[in-house]
Length: 443
Image 1 (cartoon, rainbow, N blue to C red):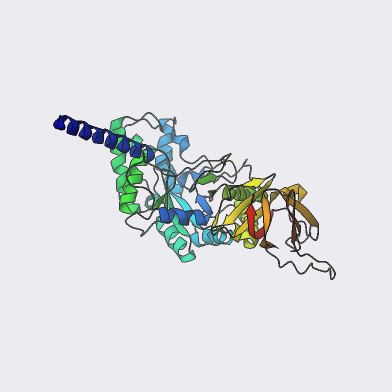
Image 2: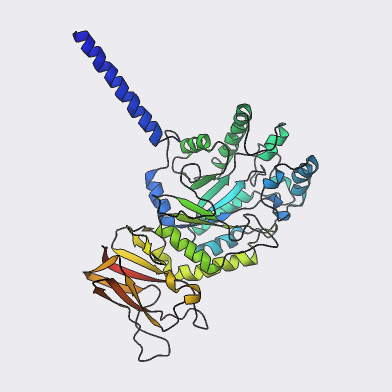
C-alpha cells in the first residue's frame, strides 16, 4: 500500500512537471534564449529609429529584391551578373545620413546588410555576390557601423535569410514560401556563416531585424553570439505599414515607408507629409511602441531630396518636443478625442499631444485656446508648461500674457494655452503642440 501511494505521488509529480513544462513552452515558444530585459527597457526609451533599404537594384528604382520571384532566366542572369557591374555609389557618405538622423532625434538605425536578393553589402567570404565585386569595391557595412558609433547612434542590421541568389545557384526555385526541409537546412548553414561575419567583424551590434525565413532558429543563434543584441522582428511584435488599433505591451516596433516603396523610387511615389510623420510618431509612442521610419538612398548613396525634407520637418518638431518622445511610457489612458498622452518613466509628468490643432486646424501664433481633458485631474502640486517656450513673452506684443494656465472643473482638467513661439516666418506652424503637466493624476 505504501509503495502504491508513493507511486501515485511520483506519477502526480511527473504530471505536474509535464504541465509546467508545457506551459513554459507556450510562454516561450521562440526558444530558451530571449532579449535581455534591461536592453528592452533601453530600446523602449529610444522611441525613433531610421530604416535604410538599399541594395544594388536601387539602380533600377524597382521594389527591392522581390522582382526576382517568378522572373525569367534572362532577367535573373542580368540581375546577378550585370547589375553589380554598374553599382558605384560614389556619393555614399554615412556621416551625412547620421547628421540628418541625429537632428531628427533618431536613436538607432537599421541597414539592409542583405535583403532577399542575397546581395551582401559587406566584405563577405561566403559569396561573390557582394559589394566588393562592384566598381565601388568597399565595405559599405563597415563604414556605416563606424559612422553610427561616431555619432552616438545605435547600430542595427537588417538580415534576410531568404537569399534568392543562393536558391538559384543551388538549383532551387526562387521563392519565399514552400521550401523543402533540405533547402531550409542548406540555406540555414549558409546564413549562420554570414551572421558569423556580421557579428564577428564589426564589434557589438545593438539591434537585428530578421525578415523572412527561419527567424526563430537564427534568433537563438544571435542570442548565443551576442546576448546584448536586441532582436526586433523575430522576437518582438513588428507591425509593418500600420499601427495597432490598441496599445500593446512593449517593447514593440512599427516600420513604415516614407512613400509607398521601401527602396528608392525615382518617379510616381506618394510621400507622407512631415505632419503625417510627426503624428505617426506621436501615436506610436502613446501606444507604447517605437517607430522605425524608412529612407531609400539613391544609387549614388545620397538620401533623396524629398525624403530628407520630411526628416528635416520632423527634426524641427523634435528639436522642440523630444523630451515627450524619448524615455517615455504609455499612460493608463492613451488619449481622448484627437489628442494623445504619454508620461515620463517616473510617472511625474504627463505629455499632452494636442493633435486636434495640427494641419488645417492649426493653433495660430498668439492665439489662446482652452482644452478640456476629461481623464485628468489636478493635485496641489500640478504645474503646466508648453514645450519649447517659457510662457512669458509673445513677440512684438508687450502686453500679451502667453502663460499657460489650468483649472479643475467638475468635467475635468481645463487647460488654457497659447502658441507663443514663432516657428515659421508666416507664424502659421501646422504641427502638434505639446503641453507638459507635472503632478497630475488620471481619474
